[in-house]
Every structure is written in C-alpha cells, then in structure tokens.
Amino acid sequence: MPCCFDALSARLIERAGFEISFMSGFSTSAAKLGLPDTGYISYGEMIDAGRDICTAVSIPVLADGDTGYGNAMNVKRTVKGYAATGFASIMIEDQVAPKRCGHTKGKDVVSRAEAVNRVRAAVDARNEGADILILARTDARTVLGMDEALERVRLFEEAGADIVFLEAPESIEEMLLHCQAAPNTPKLANMLEGGKTPVLPPAELEKMGYKIAAYPLTLLSRAVSAMNEALDDLHAGREVQGLLTFPELREIVGFEDYYAEEDRYKM
Image (cartoon, rainbow, N blue to C red; front, side, top):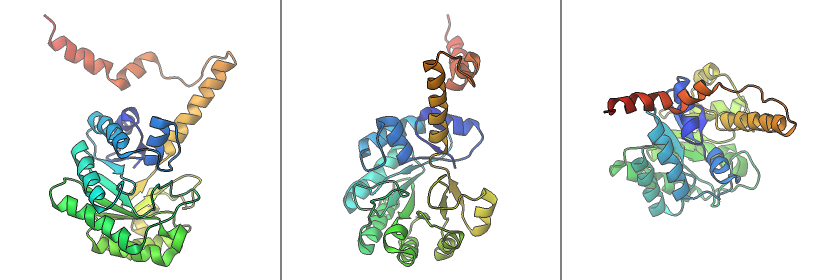
C-alpha cells in the first residue's frame, strides 16, 4: 500500500496497478502545508485533500484521522466526515493531541480507557451508518512499552476495530507479537524507511500474519529527491535529466481522456 498525499500521487499509485492506497498524514502535511506532522494540519484540511484524492481514483483509499480531533463526539463526527468524503477506512490513534509522527520524538499517549473509548466511538459511528472501516492504532510501544501496546491492540479488537496497527515495533520479534495479539483482525505493518521498525519484504510480512504493508513516505521522499536534483541542475545551468516526455506527462494527467470526451460534444 504505497501512501499518497495528493490527487496526482494517488492516480500514479492506481496506474501502477496497486489495489489500495492510504492518505498519509505526514506526507499530506508536508505537501499541503510544508509543515511537519506534529498536529498542524486540521480536520478540514485533511477532508479537502481527501476529497481531491478520492475523486481522482477508483481504488479504496484509507486515511489518517489522527486522534479524531477531540473527544469521543469529535471522533464520531470525524469518522462520518471521512466516510462522506469517500474514504474506505479511517485510522484513529491513541496519541495525546497535538499528535506527531510515530517514529519521531516527543509523542505521548492517552490513558488506556480513553484510547479504547476513541475506538468505541469510531466503531459506533460505523455501526450507525458510516460506510467506512475503522483502523485502530496504538503508539504505546514507544511510550509505555510493548506489554501495554499489545494489551491495547487486544482491547481495540474487542471494541470492534476492523484493522489494528501497533506503531513502531522495534524488532521482528515484536512484530510477531503484534500479529499474535489480535488473531481475528487484519493487521497493518508500517514500512517507513529509516524508521524504528524493520523493513521486510511483503511476502515475509504476510507470512508473519500482516494483511497490509503501508509505505508512508516512499513516494514523498523520492519525489523530493527528484525535485532537488532537478533544482540543482537548473541552478547550475545544466539540462535536467530523467524527465518524462511532454506527451507522457499529458497522458498521465488526463489530456487524452479530455480530448476524447471533448470530441463527443463538438458541433
């Protein structure tokens, strides 16, 4: 599951043959605001970005719902809003607001009871008619230890979460424990290059018990690298290398489809 951050990146993921994507909070905050994933981006800004993404593709798109943007009632509103936007699933986590990237310093989590209540509220919103799956995430591993994180995963499963996600396990052994903690619920592995969790091949993750492998920063990192290289070439007066042809770029953004549709209405 390569993660997207705007309509173009989502369309490229679909064109590449992937059957699912995820709107990364880190990447969306970076692309939309030019700011770090430390709670700057708001519910409304995520909805705006999500509307563009969901409109651009036909594959299911999961989305980062952060902490739900408030108490249990806010969580329910957030879940319903994400469902109305067109997302297939929403991730609700147990961090203290303002939240931050799970592989960076300074994060903290709410109490176990509050964490479970957030998931319960999200599940209630789903059961009340929101057409969306609930992805429950815990960041307790880094803050309170593995035992607490595993207990929260178990409780999230009991509360009715559709997918569970233990963020930032630091070894293969811990990843296996995550998979064993909620045997009846699909698990997500977060494959962040350079992060705390071992990056493993998809086949190995599946063998361990994971159902989804998310790559949250791969496209953003590669895009920034390519843009920096192009800017260095331009600044030095060199010809920029590795560009798509103009016809290729036109085709990707839909000019040919537009022309075909336009021809239908010519008089």
